[in-house]
Amino acid sequence: MLHRFSGEVKRQQIITCRPAPKGLHGKVSEVDSSAYEGILRARAEYLTTTCIHGGEQPLPYGATDAPVVLSTAFRFDDAESAALAFQGGNEAWIYGRWGNPTVSHLESRLAAVEGAESVAVTSSGMAAIAGTLLGLFSAGDHLIAPVAMYAESARLLRERLPRHGIGTTFVHAANPDDWKAALTAHTRAVYIETPANPTLAITNIRDAVTFARSHGLLLIADNTFATPFCQTPLALGADLVLHSATKALSGHGDVVGGVVAGSRLLVDRVREYTVKGLGAVLPPLSAFLIERGLRTFALRQEQANRTAAYLAKILHAHSAIEVVHHPSLASHPQHELASAQMFAFGSMMAFEVTPMGGCDALGTGRKVINALRTATHAVSLGDARTLVVHSASTTHSTMPAETRRAAGIADGLLRLSVGLEGAAALEQDLLGALDAALAP
Ligand code: PLP
Image (cartoon, protein in one colour):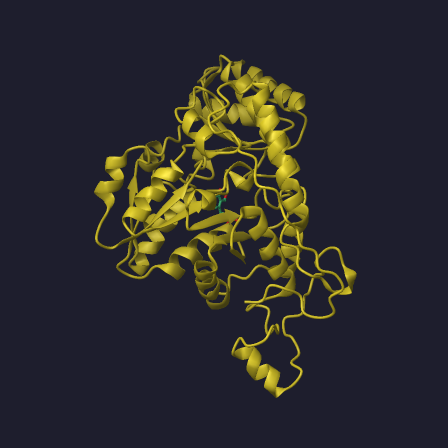
């Protein structure tokens, strides 16, 4: 697979990064501790250079940023080089679905940020997930996955993959006996999403790696909620990391894309099947937008993580809130685990409103959403703007009610993707909306 622009190369820059700072490692027991502030700064300081320069390939024309190559076909010099290109024997580009210089440059940059040997980008996050599972597994194979995860991924495992003969057993991730009981002679992989959408439930990645390795299984982790700012599952032993690049990696809510990161062997298999075979190709303009967003990724995450921890604390103390799901809080049942495996607690949270103003939880949740003015009522996450959504009536409405409840998604649960607005403005907005909901 090609990883560089062909053509005149004027400059080659090799970026060597310092080793990553250690991160939380159980050091932060209180979210307001200045230690957290320092950890966020150190993580951003380390990662931001990689976000700007990591994985840069030599570019033509002396360009500092990858040119957008829209050509779908590439001219061969002669019959011999065309034949060689088809045998993979030279670095020639052939056809847009098989590889594109702008797309390939993004892959190289993302590999540096995620700490992966190789990356394949896809047309969406779901294309990355579905393509990986269909590309690596066949009829008769079996997977194990925690019950808490993004609804569309759950639907893929629950409804769509069984049509191709691939079954999944869902487990309660915190219960090791569940994992063992789910194991069959045909189990091939463990699929995890941590923190999970939208409950922020956390799976112990090290335990999942140990379990997977001791039974010869692959460990595949959706790292979208955490982002590589907060967590690097590959460094903990996962075999593949998947992302919706639609979210924080691009960060501006203007592009849809997916990421598959891991060893070259596995990533090439997924790329061959998903991109070349199924045609889930990322357009070059989308690749350009994701790469542009990537440059500010670490700084955006530093700010959003800081604000999220602040808001979690404010909401946690509010009498109209039943529970706040954010791993920064000591009240989060897996706060210690999060501290042990994450660099930072993330910019995603969820909270459950107490029924008030004469409404049930569902009605109260809707009243709060309708009263918000700064936070935007919209799906998706990881955007510069703060996004809020009522999971039970939107993102998780396709999940059967009992499955939703088993996954911990209460009727009054609001998911908040904290953006880059000022913390004080967001605080005022949230408190104002809660006051409005209190009124009969
Ligand atoms: N994984 C998670 C955790 C998500 O939240 C989403 C979408 O919200 C996806 C994957 C799918 O990504 P996309 O919408 O880019 O297909």
